[in-house]
Length: 362
Image (cartoon, rainbow, N blue to C red; front, side, top):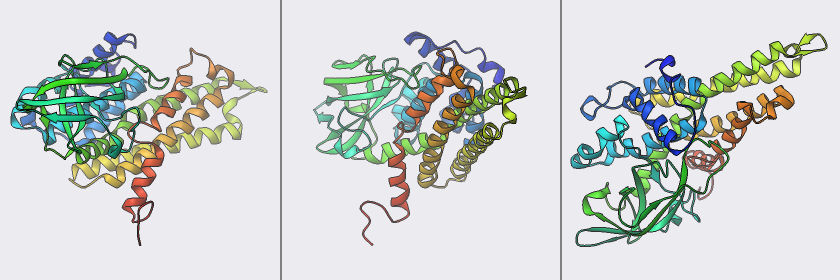
């Protein structure tokens, strides 16, 4: 898979185009990295996964596609790998890796974001399976998803369930939409007496919190691999503009105020790459990434936003036109501070792992 192959991606468009773009990435075998051969993968490393995602970002320059792909991978593929039964892996995994079906996970609710203890979606056990009732919001890959890993409580024990888009009592909607990462389809999941068989529970009863944290750790660690590729392109555009734009008979980049901003953009980009590569190194050495992934997400999302603001500032009024893709990156960067847990949540995680912060009793 090369950078040139990504150039063949369909342009962003409607819902069906969003589906085609994810399937195209699957056809380039993007979803096979860091997965064992017996599960349909390449048996290669997380570092190779990072390298391919960065190449995608540099080529497509689409934060929404990056968000969709990461929701598919960390929200469905890897939970099946880690927690799925042999039967569930055989039934779903090959289709998820090949892109024949699109997945994701549904955690957030209208009144519950990062606090999983506040989730209210319920699953009631029956003689033949489960009945689910609840409302999920801002779920990436809805409505194009064929399946979602939905988190709900059984007698107050958070658990995970495999929900198909055509299950009775389920509705994957196409709203509400947000202004950032607009090419990633997003919407609500409405569960009204949704009936599923017993073999659609993923993992053990009560393991939902651990499963969510595992999925989000991976997403936080690696979603900025693709975005780093976008930021690489962003930096190249700013450098080109600063060389071509003339101010007082000299190019814009010769002014120290501008050159310093560009220098800072370069430092941010390579710092993100170092953090993402560190997460890959830890995973490839079978080490925990809880702290490193939170640090990566915190630094990278703030850096992406600042560099996006700087890029528009350097370009002046032309950076604010609708036709300039650097303008949209500001909205995407604002969204990046929120997805996978806000910057404040990452600070809470880091402080807790250091033995400080809210709830610490020294």
